[in-house]
Image (cartoon, rainbow, N blue to C red; front, top):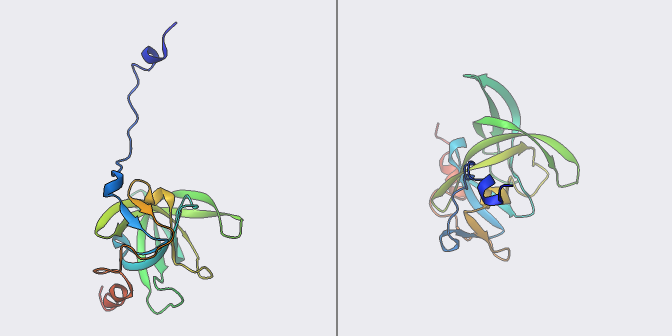
Amino acid sequence: MRSKKSSKAGTKPRARAEVARPEERLLVGWREWVALPDLGILGIKAKIDTGARTSSLHAVDFHLLRRHGRWVVRFKVNPLQHTAIKTVEAEARMIGGRHVRNSSGQVDHRVVVETTLEMQGQRWPIELTLASRDTLGFRMLLGRQALRGHAMVDPGRSFLTGPAGRHGPEGCEEEEGGA
């Protein structure tokens, strides 16, 4: 009989996601200004929700396209809460679909895309589900998968990463006349 150690000798170790040491992680509050540069969103207020596994972005007018053998989703985002004054047209690679329990407890099937999140000058890839969040308080929900290894949450504080640089409503409005 082989020992446990020798039975695993031929297997490769599993790759681990790169994780920052705790002292290198961002400290974030329960709500923060973030950017999604790949989608052209320079500032959007996100609710940080460690109770949610998956992140979600308010999106409308979804269109699935097949491009170079891959599925792409074209959609529109209103990044500022309680207004449709600013609309960003975005496109992202669809990586699948996911069943998600919504805020009222019902299970929805949502499109999942991959994009880049930026907070306080740091960037990393995240997965987002796309859903209408019109009736909810925040246009974006940032779940624990997106935060893991990158940020620690202080639930009693807000906007710890600040609206510095391009983030915040000023960053959204500056881009309005752009491409």
